[in-house]
Amino acid sequence: MNYKETLYFIAKCLTISLEEKNRDEIEIILKTTDVDWDTVVKVSTSHYVFPAIYCNFKRADFLKYLPADLVDYMKHITNLNRDRNTQILQQAQELNSLLLTNNIIPIFLKGTGNLLAGIYEDIGERMVGDIDFIFSKEDYPKAITILIEFGYSEVEKRKYYPPVKKHYRRLQKENTIAAVEIHKELLLEKYTNEFNYSFVEKDSQFINGISVLSYANKLNLSIIANQINDRGSYYKTMALRNAYDVFLLSKKTNAKDAVNASDKLTNPLNCFLAACYEVFNTVDSLEYNRIKKATAYLSVFNSQFINRKKTKRRHKQIKRYLFIKSRLNLFYNIIIYKEYRVFVFKCLTDKNWYKEKGIQFGLK
Image (cartoon, rainbow, N blue to C red):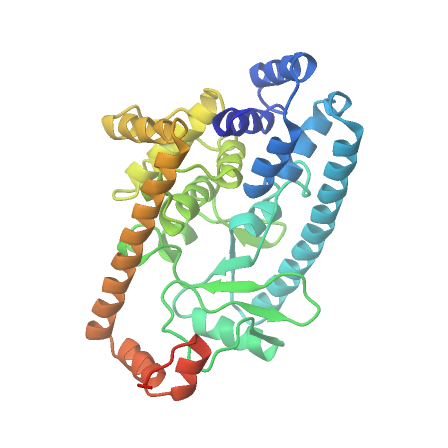
């Protein structure tokens, strides 16, 4: 199995609990084909969907087609992830109670928000990193103070911290399972006027006393995390963890309508939805707007699987371009914003900062 075949196989495996067509196709493959399980494990692990495959196979009664040692390994990893997610949910509920007591309502985001909303049949399916939540600009500094007073502190200790744009630096409390990111924005600066706290707060939903995004905004944020924040719209790549969330959420809201609820974001949202539609084998709930930009996106997306070496070169060029762009943006911020000038001045006038960065000056 080459990379494309493996990716598409894994994607279809993620849908077999809800898509009968894909379930039948995967069962035929499992019965008649010698699947390269080493490659499947490698790719699904890199996309953070390995436990989700196991859960779907278990629900479809397909584990009987897999090697016994692989099933044992999948079960072990999923059990570990389920235990971790149980602790994350307990930590999130503790944080929610703490903040509500202080008259602040957090809106939980991303993986933790999806776990709290119950979009997974088994909480062991979703691999989660941090606990993310967003606040109004008025409550944002209050939330930081409350968590620090409660025992949370910076995960990465630095002498100088750069100015905060999207979220406060990661915090964690001793004996807790996950770090916390306190957001005041959801997106990079270019899109903050379209998708922000005010936009998502108006139709957020309370589930078991906890505030989470609407299903439509959950779907959009799942795409945004890949397309915008992780620069997926440049690379034209697929992150299956995000795509799986989009697939599940498309069963709870109209995906086509959801991605058309904005202006600047509509194209990257629709393009990712188009890639999901194709990779998951033309699932009806992932139907997208068939416009020229989506067709062009899919053309580049599919061409990347043909020549992997050429794709790697292209990605290196994109990475170089984004690096230069980020540095130019930094220079712009230094000119426009005082807090950036202060931060840079402190770093450049501190000899210890150079040592920490491994930079040495002087003539021999």
